Length: 277
Image 1: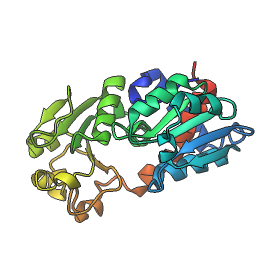
Image 2: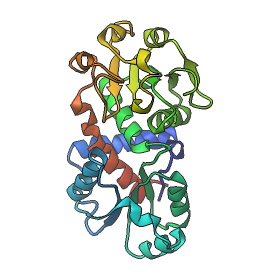
Image 3: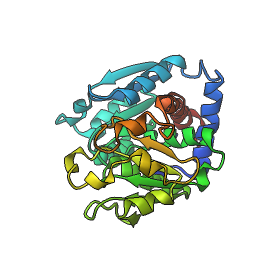
């Protein structure tokens, strides 16, 4: 059994095992591994991509998913009591909740694996899926320069966690005041892009005026290294972090890039419940 609350809960060996399982799942293996298993999900109504891929992934492996809204966890009942009861029936818990401390506490009392499906602090499943997708396109994906253009938010921090855990090169580009702690920073967007293989973005709608010089355009992407790719975290807003033309260009990784969410999240569940030491 192994929890996944932060990307740093995984070693590079864990990541490679997840990717191997994802490859096998793509080949149609493990389709009956969850028969008789129940995975309890906590998701807000607004979740689209992460929720549908978890539910479909569980179904495709023969398991049962039981869905509750995230705010079910905000009742007066103690977390240790909720965990204690769920230990009787659940084989895994997938939790999307704003407060990572709540997920930390749940994992302390849970006798079954807890998987973080997004908090205000990070989003480990999303980043692991993206890294897997990059590994399918570039065998040298761990040697590339990853550049995140955005705020000190959950997506940026998740990428920072992953870079520390797995050892790939990562920098943040942003105006002053939005830096992720203990990460390399470049304030000049042209300098940042010129040394980059992968451009990552996240919404900066709350700070759009401060980030007006940081929008990714085709002209900027043409300054990047040969074969550079743009991976904006959905939901993205054309006219803010990216312009519409660059989404229609060869630089955008494409909507199919996120297809890996299904296989990687299946692999995370399978690894957490069955395979992890």
